[in-house]
Length: 100
Image (cartoon, rainbow, N blue to C red; front, side, top):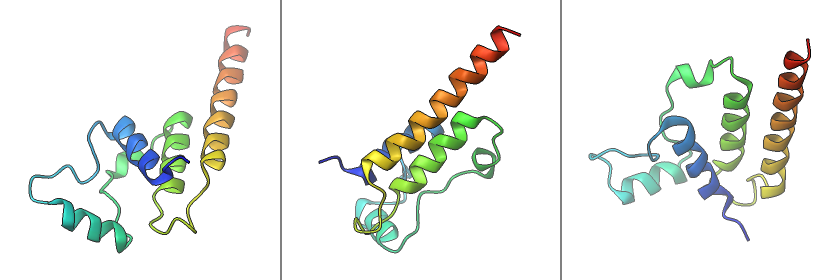
């Protein structure tokens, strides 16, 4: 079984270029407590305001993963669908742009 929350951490690393809660002032216990209380790692406003559709798909997938209670969290197949749909859309748009 895939650990979907960990997938959110991986996506965060891809988008931001660092690990969530990668701060010398935050130890593992504090990070876990923040996650348990629904406080996710800080994400600069510029990431949420991107006009790049793949960036937005990654953020949507990350948000789907970053739910503390596993019962409320998206399934891996749902995250995959979001990412594959956007990849297909990006490929279609690129194909249309090349053939115009």
